[in-house]
Image 1 (cartoon, rainbow, N blue to C red):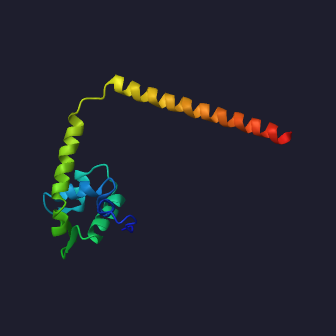
Image 2: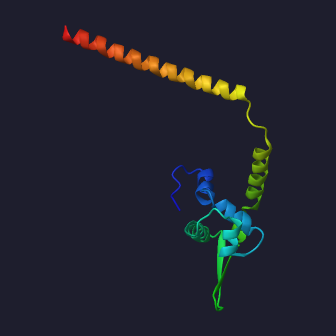
Image 3: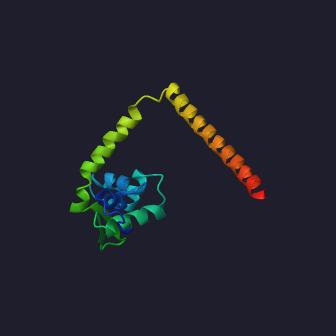
Length: 146
């Protein structure tokens, strides 16, 4: 894991749960232990390599326990540890927030137009500043040449 540079607890948490897949993997492991291919079916867009890397990272942080059963063929299961179970309230909040995001009405065109007008005005201001700077540079060259 990367070193916490700000000392902020939020940064510490984000280094653990950040990224696209880790929280999703933890979400599916809340139901109980799962095998690798069960997780692949639950998360169809994740590549095998990425799932392996994310499971290893979660295992390294102590959030996921990897259990290898001495059978032929070998059976491997992944489960949340006690520390991993502490993610449950966070996952529930993310679930609720995600449902709210899906249900909210689309933004009105007037809001989008207002934002694009603001961006256009900013662009105009930038162009004016650039012209003023160029004009100032020309005047300075003229004064230096005299």
